[in-house]
Image 1 (spheres, rainbow, N blue to C red):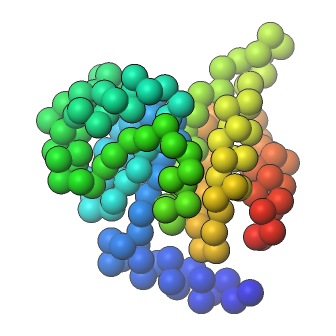
Image 2: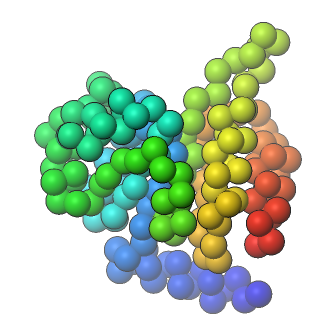
Length: 157
């Protein structure tokens, strides 16, 4: 595979604002990221398991202090940002950021269950040229030890 060519294609799509961005987890990290991405001119899809959050976003109502209703409403009304609970829509994105919670477990370590679940959903819809970024707070090595093997189980490298 010619990675240079693939990165050139992705770079061009970013420059031309043709990339579709995705954000999994519409909490205090994910929602601001999704809104700013949409404000920058990138069509953005937000994914969350909580229907109440998705409904609030799609109505232009923010539940995060750092996101103004006016900004959220603007990108929703311009059809630059929409939220969904349908993780099958992941196949439509070219870039996806995982911003799910990683609460501490009983031993004081990050519980990466939400990360693992998100990565499995991405792997089901992974396509050539898709960029995946882990934004969730977790221990060093999570990308190599957990994320990469699950994504590569799709047959892509």
